Image 1: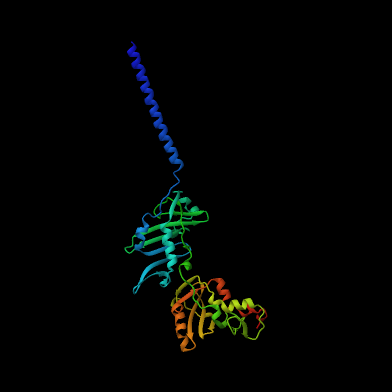
Image 2: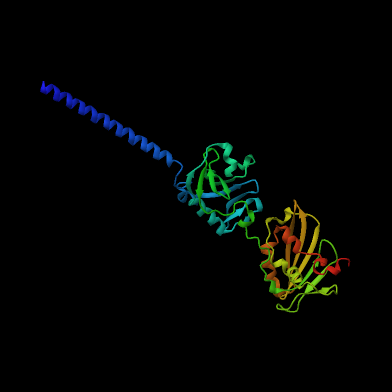
Length: 341
């Protein structure tokens, strides 16, 4: 009788242990699921794993957005390798900007899981630009056309978001990338690197009103209107107009033959050294474009003129509205009393 009772007690105790163990296991699983659910949005890791090992094989970069689309490709020029903007007549791309993109893509990292609902893509700016969305499609191809990078980026005030074109899942990310919508930031669009202090005379035929000439006797002397004979009342405006050709910041570029039309304005700038720079403003393709050519006044200036032509003669530069307003400004904007002349 005693042994039977003891055996029952042992069986009951064993059952209690088994039940307790099962409850502990269930609790552990439940806790793990809860914790995993609470932190499921937190992620980490590179957006493009292994890119540092493959990016050197990239030969083409394609940026597509609603604002601007362009292709950058690696080109061989003799023994030199250059990256050029194919859509802009193979205009050279700045090496520093290319390095910024490369480093930025390599260091791009996930920070948080966002939505997989395509109806919410617009909110994060990751809609496909090929379908009218405001996302930025960044693609990097190797020499065989294989995609090393294929991402749609949402660059928004609230942060950076990323998804792959063939996947609705969107992620928050962190990283430093160049201004991908600004094509001018990739290109060294400084047509004239002659210093303003080297100019001695500027002859202007504006879009409207009479032609006029600005001149000075030395680099530290003030500019003055020498023709027509008018009083100069706005010296700051005179200085800005005279030196505008050295301070232009174009927003786009095309091969010079691609831009045709009658000039709407002309400017001729002469340096103290005897180099003449002739400029024309042409309206074409919905913008105002600048064409430049330099001439030497004497044999000793031929190398200086050639250096300018090698840089600018093959290109037409699109100017911003701000530059257009200052470059070849009407005489009446410098001397209001000349408006009716």
